Length: 444
Image (tube, rainbow, N blue to C red; front, top):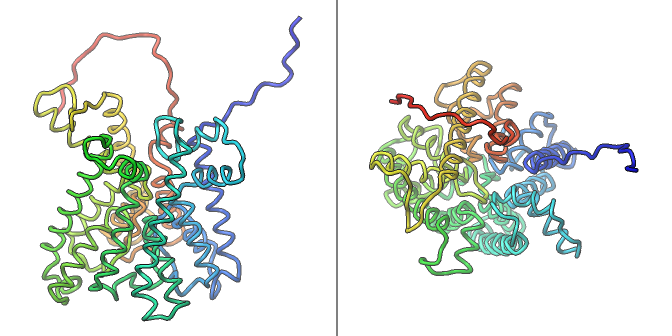
């Protein structure tokens, strides 16, 4: 005789929801840590602490207080730790800790890790995680050493060394947090800073899977399709944005107009590289012309690569959208690129991600306009920057009131966790029991 079931088995939470809860928990812990008296040089509000913690965990870089002035060394260390955890991925960090302690990583943890790394398979995740750690530590240490060459002679070993380490971690994780009110504007023409910082956030923005593929394969023909698309797409966007930033801002007295021609070239390169991911700046972003600001908004929405430390809809998503459009005009029913064909499921995923992202940005921007006084373009810029977890600002962030901050916090959080995660929670896949005849809808 079967024994009665006294307790129903609890339903496991879906991995995307678990990840959202983990990120929310670390944001809360960061808020509490930043509110400690030892973390600040003077009193800050709970809103200041929550906004800063969210910006750090989501590796955005938008700030409502001056990071270098408002926080002590302890507070800055907390921010750097939150940046590292948020950029590396909280589940990635947890799996690394379990591995170092010799504890087994179960199937459930692998599912969470798969979601955190945006992978389609749960196999070989541990080797990918260990490779990620090696890449992160190597890049950040090399970056800190190069930046120390500039910062230490100017500030001394203690201050300069800390500044080099903080900015190296912030750059590789595409956080955009800086210890100076004008970000890195005082080094607008310094070759070391203009090469090291962009190199760090470009490497971080390419994505860990690309770095692993390049490290292991080292041959273009054997690279995966994702790696090829990311390398080609990133290079094209960097070249295009550098050229057009220089063209549009060359004579603008608020940005490039007062600099020498060499500094203008460095500044054009730096701003073009930082726009999609990082959030550092060497010129006054508030002084950009409207046309340049619109270009920046577009680049921030595109963002970085999958499994990277950046946000946005991702470079590969943008490329697939272009390829799908091109295939339509060529009357093709499939998308072929680099000798490979993309399936319908990937195209549908791209369309879903793009639509959710656009709706999120428009909805957040609309509510922000209702609740917040401010310039139309400035608020649009802040919303796109928050969604892309970029951190560039035209000055509107510091003027946000509590409802405005809440909107930006929400956009930063969703921008980091991923619009598809939100879509996963709002929809449950169900098998179709009934089929229907095809019909035609007139479009365009």
